[in-house]
Image (cartoon, rainbow, N blue to C red; front, side, top):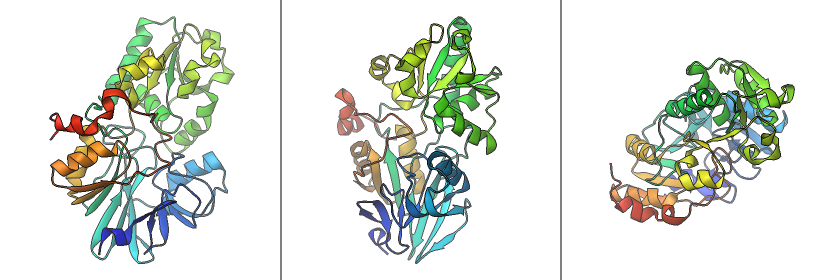
Length: 356
């Protein structure tokens, strides 16, 4: 069976006519299969949603218990019949509850990876690579300049700064779902045992992570503390907050930001970030290439991000690939603003020696 008979592109997103469902649809549909809880993939208003139990809890926390007409929890690895196709969810390693969706029909297997990463993350299951005929991947960091260091070493930078500047509050900008909790869990693993203060926007999801078994240690709401007395403490907040009046009420705040985009120094300077921490919940360039090769896929579809470079690299490896140019993704999880200047020359970058 042809892959395009199993999945096709519609204005709502990827659609499986044989199973009559969409994957991560950007508009309300009768039946949605959702890879993870970020708002650009998990939206409210669908007739029915099939996702992991954790993703369903995250959606309910963000949108309310009536976020969909019906919901069904998918157990990882369990095959579920959807019309004329078989589907199963396997870990994606992106955030808590994230999953890739494996779709099979007529002897053809497609894997929709959603967003995924290969790096260490104590808050979710590691990514599981599934051999397939067609691998559908993102390319948020699909340029050779993006190579993410070990996230634990980036957290060590924060700990070193706390030792060096005990008179200053340390603000860490991090996305509310996934990144914030990952940074906090890594701090705990590194032995940091003081309370971690959180912005009001983080409270609900941090409490949900703790309820779902992720140990974040003592978490204190900033609203319950005297900000003037938080010298030497860690405060986790949404990225925009580090540039707002809210941040100026802390003692001589150090502006930190945990994001894969902190690999671009100009971007860190542009955002006034004093302590850039290159921590991403997406694959870097090497991990994207590694994942594609490990699936053994003869065909690759690239959903969003820096599609052209990855498609070009696939071509150099003899793998058929095409960009889907899907709109509506990349709005959460990483700051995916326009890549400009020399970073906007993907094909040339690949040709400059970026082969495995």
